Image (cartoon, rainbow, N blue to C red; front, side, top):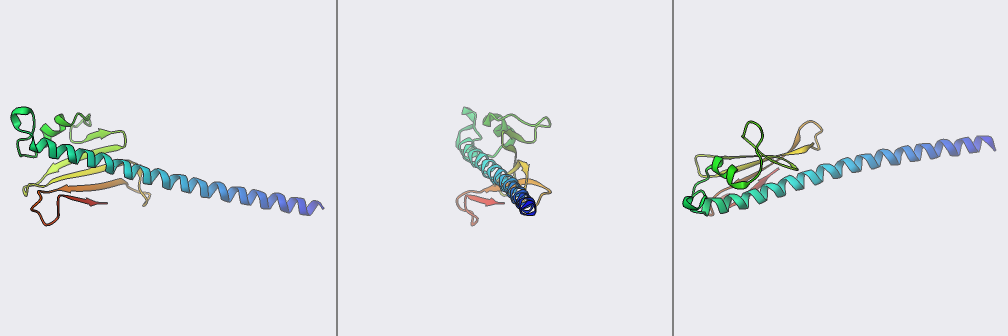
Length: 141
């Protein structure tokens, strides 16, 4: 009877250890997915705010039809990183740039390490005018 009890004890320990390992992995995946969704939501909020800023006349504190990134950073109300090049949210950091073609590019960097276990979670949104073939919003993960 002693060997059966030891075998049951060893089997129980193996099952419990496997369950704990699987649970930790699931928890880690859930955190990564949640951070990715949260930073993308922050980016969408900033994209809509950027559209409002661009359409607001400059005399009222807006962009007056322009994507002036420095003025938009002030307009958004989000705090900046110490170097002033990114906005800080509770889900990560967001960098906004505009290019010569009139597109606004919003890059988001999450606080968690991504699924590749080497780089932080990243996403990109391109804002273009409605006449562009890419459309107004393009989300690139």
